[in-house]
Length: 461
Image (cartoon, rainbow, N blue to C red; front, side, top):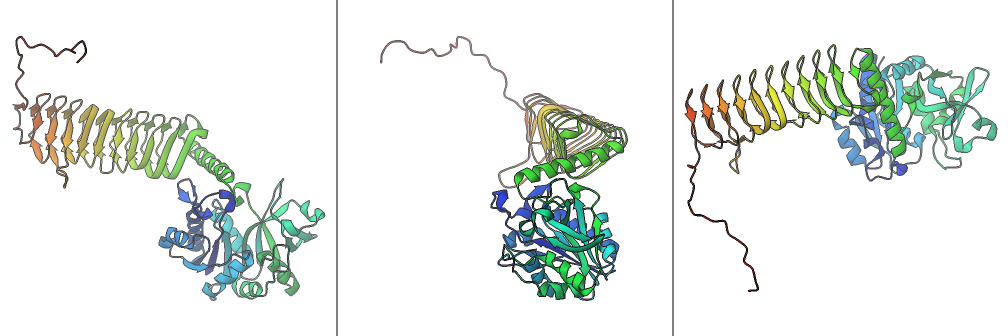
């Protein structure tokens, strides 16, 4: 079934108390709007063909830039005169050949594709289908008014009588309608209400008057239909989402030290017997192999970590690959392009950037490896660095297998150290070091007999 999806994203979000448009605030590392766009795409994939229309208004240019890669069509609602008015702006952009139009809200980020698809199927191109839920506190929501089992109307909270406000079944703001009927209904809306706005919910009465069936589909959970109107609500929804992610991971066998202290801001895939300590953040695309252990307070972004690797606490990894059995940290930093082979050791206060370290290489403390190719079983001493930048360009350091670099050395790139070379501690190496030999480049130690340390003078000048 071909489908139109309208996402309403024009609101300012005054209660957010922010210059950023409401739908661009982030949940789990993505904007609220990006979550809804992803749901629309998945529903469209199931439906066959989809045309997504995003209604923008406040901060329209920012919102449209955020959603530009989605392929959506944008229409602007200026000024914002209610939900019905928003859909009025979208009508000319709808594909009339798509039988059903699904309406979603850009500030309701956790609606599941399965729930949205069920709403589309309930519509079936012939009915007006509403997504509803029963809430213990329905304040602010439009109430579902029934006669027996039949839905007869939706009454907005501000316009509801005391008896209607006692109704617990509410409209979530999401519906699916036959496209042709929706277009006709919204163009007939009037604004004779307390707010002087055009309410999309008034089309329910129109459908009833025309004998079009109005059906209600219940949302499986409150979390799916909660909107974001304030920083407090955003934080609450973040924790609900993270708890659901944590439970999913634990059900798959991941051991979390504390599921309340985990943040996944992207996609995290885990092998078997993975252990994750507290306060870890995973961003982008992260893959953890079998038996990986992640220590407390680590940040891992867009990285793959091989089986049996141990990431010690307070380590920051971004755009890197860590081989099986490697040990990293604590307090290590792997920057983009760091590629660690099997059983590599990167210790405390070591930074690696755009460098490849072969099997068994070690840089155990206080070192920097940038733009380097490091062979197997290399030992890179404490305080040593690759000086890869000449002020204009980056240059590469090549270190052969079984090289030993002593402490406090500077390797001035471009430079090559041959297999088995040894670099004496404190050396500055700017020329190739031959394989299998000791290379030292430092001033001769000198002692000056009779030299005395300067002393402070006493008395007045």
